[in-house]
Length: 252
Image (tube, helix red, strand yellow):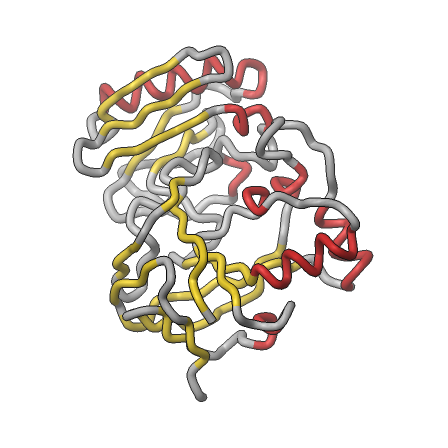
């Protein structure tokens, strides 16, 4: 098996950034993945005592389809985040500072309009990930599974709907559903597969048009009897992996 695509999503709900490689620590996620999020005003998120909250407490595609039209780019070396709206309106801020986050938050709140609840605030907490899962994980999807899904649906389902960190080839369609509890060697890191990825309404959003034009959750349930596409994994031995690296299923 082989890594074909590698992504991080610095801002929860916003665009992917393609990577050539990543180095991960034990129990960690890809650096800067879901490092930032716009917390809705009624979320109760407290940066002084950060804790995991469900995605609907934040700006997210499951609730806010229009954010698919926003382009974002984060530069770890400078701490600058660039956001560009569909009308060309652009904001560039140093989001490792409170002032920069406040200005990004104001930009996103204005963009959300009536979908903003209370007074949203743009958050970053060193070491915290705004992942959909309670623990820090890496998400993987087998490209053969996506292709089989598309073939049975009879239509394209753009891979960006599913927001995985790692896309890989070389395994039969849906084989990864049997890997839960097992470990994989991925480049120089070892990961333990913890669970399948249950899909949600975020996948309804077309990443190119921001329209809810499909229902992958219902399609998966009808065609396959489950609503999973992909797997989650925790890092049990840190290391580097890159596009083109091998993935090997390890023995129990």
